[in-house]
Length: 115
Length: 167
Image (tube, rainbow over all chains, first blue to last red; front, side):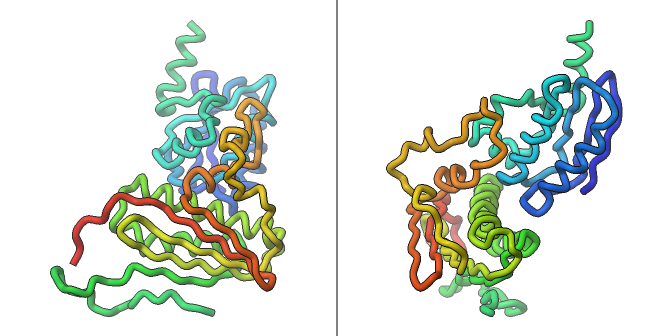
Protein backbone atom coordinates (compact mmCIF):
# COMPACT_ATOMS: atom_id res chain seq x y z
CA UNK A 1 0.00 0.00 0.00
CA UNK A 2 1.78 3.10 -1.22
CA UNK A 3 0.68 6.33 0.45
CA UNK A 4 2.79 9.47 0.53
CA UNK A 5 1.99 12.36 2.82
CA UNK A 6 3.30 15.89 2.44
CA UNK A 7 2.40 19.07 4.33
CA UNK A 8 1.48 21.78 1.80
CA UNK A 9 -0.04 25.22 2.49
CA UNK A 10 -1.46 24.15 5.83
CA UNK A 11 -2.95 20.92 4.52
CA UNK A 12 -1.67 17.38 4.71
CA UNK A 13 -1.80 16.01 1.16
CA UNK A 14 -1.85 12.21 0.99
CA UNK A 15 -1.20 10.76 -2.45
CA UNK A 16 -2.50 7.25 -3.07
CA UNK A 17 0.05 5.63 -5.35
CA UNK A 18 -2.12 2.62 -6.13
CA UNK A 19 -4.34 1.80 -9.10
CA UNK A 20 -7.00 0.23 -6.91
CA UNK A 21 -8.58 0.60 -3.50
CA UNK A 22 -10.56 -2.62 -3.39
CA UNK A 23 -11.50 -5.46 -1.05
CA UNK A 24 -7.96 -6.85 -1.24
CA UNK A 25 -6.35 -3.68 0.08
CA UNK A 26 -9.07 -1.78 2.01
CA UNK A 27 -7.87 -2.83 5.48
CA UNK A 28 -4.26 -1.92 4.71
CA UNK A 29 -5.42 1.40 3.31
CA UNK A 30 -7.14 2.23 6.63
CA UNK A 31 -4.08 1.17 8.65
CA UNK A 32 -1.63 3.12 6.49
CA UNK A 33 -3.85 6.20 6.54
CA UNK A 34 -3.80 6.12 10.33
CA UNK A 35 0.01 6.10 10.22
CA UNK A 36 0.52 8.83 7.64
CA UNK A 37 -2.07 11.16 9.16
CA UNK A 38 -0.33 11.00 12.56
CA UNK A 39 1.30 14.35 11.77
CA UNK A 40 -1.06 17.13 12.80
CA UNK A 41 -3.10 19.04 10.24
CA UNK A 42 -6.71 20.15 10.30
CA UNK A 43 -7.21 19.45 6.61
CA UNK A 44 -6.25 16.13 5.07
CA UNK A 45 -6.53 16.07 1.27
CA UNK A 46 -6.56 12.59 -0.26
CA UNK A 47 -5.15 12.73 -3.79
CA UNK A 48 -6.86 9.87 -5.64
CA UNK A 49 -5.75 10.82 -9.14
CA UNK A 50 -3.77 7.57 -9.56
CA UNK A 51 -6.69 5.39 -8.45
CA UNK A 52 -8.57 3.86 -11.40
CA UNK A 53 -10.84 1.58 -9.42
CA UNK A 54 -12.71 1.82 -6.14
CA UNK A 55 -15.24 -0.75 -4.95
CA UNK A 56 -17.64 -0.67 -2.00
CA UNK A 57 -14.93 -1.97 0.37
CA UNK A 58 -12.64 0.85 -0.73
CA UNK A 59 -15.43 3.37 -0.31
CA UNK A 60 -16.14 2.04 3.18
CA UNK A 61 -12.45 2.42 4.03
CA UNK A 62 -12.40 6.06 2.86
CA UNK A 63 -15.49 6.76 5.00
CA UNK A 64 -13.85 5.03 7.98
CA UNK A 65 -10.79 7.27 7.61
CA UNK A 66 -13.00 10.34 7.47
CA UNK A 67 -14.75 9.28 10.67
CA UNK A 68 -11.50 8.52 12.46
CA UNK A 69 -10.25 12.07 11.73
CA UNK A 70 -13.50 13.79 12.78
CA UNK A 71 -14.50 15.97 14.49
CA UNK A 72 -11.33 18.03 14.75
CA UNK A 73 -9.87 17.11 11.36
CA UNK A 74 -11.45 17.01 7.92
CA UNK A 75 -10.84 14.53 5.10
CA UNK A 76 -11.25 16.03 1.63
CA UNK A 77 -10.85 14.24 -1.69
CA UNK A 78 -9.19 15.34 -4.90
CA UNK A 79 -8.56 14.10 -8.42
CA UNK A 80 -11.29 11.46 -8.66
CA UNK A 81 -10.99 9.50 -11.93
CA UNK A 82 -14.28 8.81 -13.78
CA UNK A 83 -14.85 5.30 -12.42
CA UNK A 84 -14.08 6.37 -8.88
CA UNK A 85 -16.32 9.44 -9.13
CA UNK A 86 -19.13 7.19 -10.33
CA UNK A 87 -19.05 5.10 -7.14
CA UNK A 88 -19.34 8.27 -5.04
CA UNK A 89 -22.25 9.48 -7.19
CA UNK A 90 -24.17 6.17 -7.23
CA UNK A 91 -24.00 5.89 -3.45
CA UNK A 92 -24.60 9.64 -2.96
CA UNK A 93 -21.47 9.75 -0.82
CA UNK A 94 -20.34 12.68 -2.99
CA UNK A 95 -22.72 14.73 -0.84
CA UNK A 96 -20.70 13.94 2.28
CA UNK A 97 -17.18 14.74 1.09
CA UNK A 98 -15.65 17.97 -0.11
CA UNK A 99 -14.35 16.88 -3.54
CA UNK A 100 -11.77 18.93 -5.46
CA UNK A 101 -10.78 18.65 -9.13
CA UNK A 102 -7.12 18.25 -8.17
CA UNK A 103 -4.68 18.99 -5.36
CA UNK A 104 -3.97 22.43 -6.79
CA UNK A 105 -7.64 23.38 -6.51
CA UNK A 106 -7.83 21.99 -2.97
CA UNK A 107 -4.85 24.07 -1.86
CA UNK A 108 -6.15 27.19 -3.60
CA UNK A 109 -9.37 26.90 -1.68
CA UNK A 110 -7.44 26.62 1.56
CA UNK A 111 -5.57 29.83 0.76
CA UNK A 112 -8.78 31.67 -0.11
CA UNK A 113 -10.39 30.58 3.14
CA UNK A 114 -7.30 31.60 5.09
CA UNK A 115 -7.33 35.04 3.43
CA UNK B 1 -11.14 -26.82 -12.75
CA UNK B 2 -12.72 -25.31 -15.80
CA UNK B 3 -10.41 -23.30 -17.94
CA UNK B 4 -10.91 -20.05 -19.76
CA UNK B 5 -11.99 -21.21 -23.16
CA UNK B 6 -10.79 -18.36 -25.26
CA UNK B 7 -8.69 -19.67 -28.07
CA UNK B 8 -5.27 -18.44 -27.05
CA UNK B 9 -2.70 -18.21 -29.76
CA UNK B 10 -5.09 -19.00 -32.55
CA UNK B 11 -5.30 -16.57 -35.42
CA UNK B 12 -8.32 -14.31 -35.19
CA UNK B 13 -10.86 -14.63 -37.98
CA UNK B 14 -10.28 -12.16 -40.77
CA UNK B 15 -12.49 -9.13 -40.93
CA UNK B 16 -15.65 -9.82 -42.85
CA UNK B 17 -15.46 -13.52 -42.09
CA UNK B 18 -18.76 -15.09 -41.15
CA UNK B 19 -17.53 -16.61 -37.90
CA UNK B 20 -16.75 -13.89 -35.40
CA UNK B 21 -14.81 -14.90 -32.32
CA UNK B 22 -17.31 -16.19 -29.75
CA UNK B 23 -17.42 -13.78 -26.83
CA UNK B 24 -17.65 -16.20 -23.97
CA UNK B 25 -15.79 -16.29 -20.68
CA UNK B 26 -15.80 -19.16 -18.24
CA UNK B 27 -13.50 -19.29 -15.27
CA UNK B 28 -13.28 -20.94 -11.85
CA UNK B 29 -11.07 -19.49 -9.16
CA UNK B 30 -10.38 -19.52 -5.42
CA UNK B 31 -12.66 -17.37 -3.23
CA UNK B 32 -10.08 -14.86 -1.99
CA UNK B 33 -9.59 -11.16 -2.78
CA UNK B 34 -6.45 -11.55 -4.89
CA UNK B 35 -7.96 -14.34 -7.00
CA UNK B 36 -11.00 -12.11 -7.52
CA UNK B 37 -8.67 -9.37 -8.76
CA UNK B 38 -7.09 -11.75 -11.25
CA UNK B 39 -10.47 -13.02 -12.46
CA UNK B 40 -11.69 -9.44 -12.93
CA UNK B 41 -8.62 -8.62 -14.98
CA UNK B 42 -9.16 -11.69 -17.19
CA UNK B 43 -12.89 -11.01 -17.63
CA UNK B 44 -12.28 -7.36 -18.45
CA UNK B 45 -9.57 -8.26 -20.97
CA UNK B 46 -12.04 -10.60 -22.65
CA UNK B 47 -14.86 -8.10 -23.17
CA UNK B 48 -13.75 -4.49 -22.94
CA UNK B 49 -12.46 -4.25 -26.51
CA UNK B 50 -16.00 -3.52 -27.68
CA UNK B 51 -17.10 -1.35 -24.77
CA UNK B 52 -16.86 2.27 -23.81
CA UNK B 53 -14.57 2.99 -20.87
CA UNK B 54 -17.67 3.88 -18.84
CA UNK B 55 -19.20 0.47 -19.58
CA UNK B 56 -15.94 -1.26 -18.71
CA UNK B 57 -15.86 0.59 -15.38
CA UNK B 58 -19.43 -0.45 -14.65
CA UNK B 59 -18.68 -4.07 -15.53
CA UNK B 60 -15.65 -4.17 -13.25
CA UNK B 61 -17.56 -2.59 -10.36
CA UNK B 62 -20.56 -4.89 -10.75
CA UNK B 63 -18.43 -8.05 -10.94
CA UNK B 64 -16.21 -6.92 -8.06
CA UNK B 65 -19.23 -6.38 -5.81
CA UNK B 66 -20.77 -9.76 -6.66
CA UNK B 67 -17.52 -11.70 -6.30
CA UNK B 68 -16.22 -9.97 -3.18
CA UNK B 69 -19.60 -10.45 -1.54
CA UNK B 70 -19.21 -14.20 -2.04
CA UNK B 71 -15.65 -14.12 -0.63
CA UNK B 72 -16.67 -12.06 2.38
CA UNK B 73 -20.16 -13.35 3.23
CA UNK B 74 -20.73 -16.54 1.22
CA UNK B 75 -17.50 -18.10 2.46
CA UNK B 76 -17.08 -15.83 5.49
CA UNK B 77 -13.57 -14.66 4.51
CA UNK B 78 -12.33 -18.22 5.10
CA UNK B 79 -10.21 -18.10 1.94
CA UNK B 80 -11.63 -21.52 1.13
CA UNK B 81 -14.05 -22.45 -1.61
CA UNK B 82 -14.37 -21.78 -5.31
CA UNK B 83 -16.29 -19.35 -7.46
CA UNK B 84 -17.28 -19.97 -11.06
CA UNK B 85 -17.99 -17.02 -13.33
CA UNK B 86 -19.55 -17.42 -16.78
CA UNK B 87 -20.26 -14.57 -19.16
CA UNK B 88 -21.67 -14.38 -22.67
CA UNK B 89 -21.85 -11.27 -24.82
CA UNK B 90 -24.87 -10.79 -27.05
CA UNK B 91 -26.29 -7.87 -28.98
CA UNK B 92 -27.86 -6.22 -25.93
CA UNK B 93 -25.25 -6.72 -23.30
CA UNK B 94 -23.54 -9.28 -21.14
CA UNK B 95 -25.25 -12.23 -19.50
CA UNK B 96 -23.42 -13.30 -16.38
CA UNK B 97 -23.82 -16.20 -14.01
CA UNK B 98 -21.87 -16.82 -10.83
CA UNK B 99 -21.96 -19.97 -8.74
CA UNK B 100 -20.45 -20.89 -5.39
CA UNK B 101 -20.86 -23.36 -2.52
CA UNK B 102 -21.05 -20.80 0.27
CA UNK B 103 -23.93 -20.07 2.61
CA UNK B 104 -27.34 -19.08 1.30
CA UNK B 105 -27.87 -15.51 0.14
CA UNK B 106 -30.30 -13.61 2.42
CA UNK B 107 -33.57 -13.05 0.55
CA UNK B 108 -33.61 -9.28 0.98
CA UNK B 109 -30.37 -8.94 -1.01
CA UNK B 110 -32.22 -9.39 -4.28
CA UNK B 111 -35.77 -8.50 -3.30
CA UNK B 112 -36.75 -5.87 -5.82
CA UNK B 113 -40.08 -5.13 -4.19
CA UNK B 114 -38.28 -3.03 -1.63
CA UNK B 115 -37.76 0.46 -2.99
CA UNK B 116 -34.19 1.13 -4.04
CA UNK B 117 -34.11 4.38 -2.11
CA UNK B 118 -34.72 2.66 1.20
CA UNK B 119 -31.91 0.21 0.50
CA UNK B 120 -29.22 2.76 -0.16
CA UNK B 121 -27.25 3.37 3.01
CA UNK B 122 -27.97 6.93 4.05
CA UNK B 123 -24.94 9.16 3.33
CA UNK B 124 -25.41 11.27 6.45
CA UNK B 125 -25.05 8.17 8.62
CA UNK B 126 -21.51 7.85 7.22
CA UNK B 127 -21.93 4.14 6.52
CA UNK B 128 -18.80 2.05 6.10
CA UNK B 129 -20.62 -0.87 4.51
CA UNK B 130 -23.85 -1.98 2.94
CA UNK B 131 -23.06 -0.41 -0.42
CA UNK B 132 -22.31 -3.68 -2.19
CA UNK B 133 -25.81 -4.99 -2.78
CA UNK B 134 -27.14 -1.52 -3.39
CA UNK B 135 -24.64 -1.15 -6.26
CA UNK B 136 -25.40 -4.63 -7.63
CA UNK B 137 -29.15 -3.93 -7.71
CA UNK B 138 -28.51 -0.52 -9.22
CA UNK B 139 -26.18 -1.66 -12.02
CA UNK B 140 -27.50 -5.12 -12.92
CA UNK B 141 -30.65 -6.09 -14.79
CA UNK B 142 -32.70 -9.28 -14.52
CA UNK B 143 -31.09 -10.25 -11.25
CA UNK B 144 -32.04 -13.78 -10.28
CA UNK B 145 -30.95 -16.16 -7.56
CA UNK B 146 -31.42 -19.87 -7.16
CA UNK B 147 -30.04 -22.30 -4.59
CA UNK B 148 -29.98 -25.99 -5.28
CA UNK B 149 -28.06 -28.81 -3.57
CA UNK B 150 -26.10 -26.36 -1.45
CA UNK B 151 -24.97 -24.39 -4.47
CA UNK B 152 -25.74 -20.71 -5.06
CA UNK B 153 -26.43 -19.54 -8.57
CA UNK B 154 -26.74 -15.84 -9.26
CA UNK B 155 -27.59 -14.59 -12.73
CA UNK B 156 -27.78 -11.05 -14.04
CA UNK B 157 -27.35 -8.94 -17.14
CA UNK B 158 -25.33 -5.84 -17.79
CA UNK B 159 -26.95 -3.80 -20.58
CA UNK B 160 -24.47 -2.39 -23.10
CA UNK B 161 -24.63 -0.15 -26.14
CA UNK B 162 -24.80 -2.10 -29.43
CA UNK B 163 -21.46 -3.43 -30.60
CA UNK B 164 -19.76 -1.89 -33.60
CA UNK B 165 -19.73 -4.16 -36.63
CA UNK B 166 -17.22 -6.90 -36.23
CA UNK B 167 -16.10 -9.54 -38.65
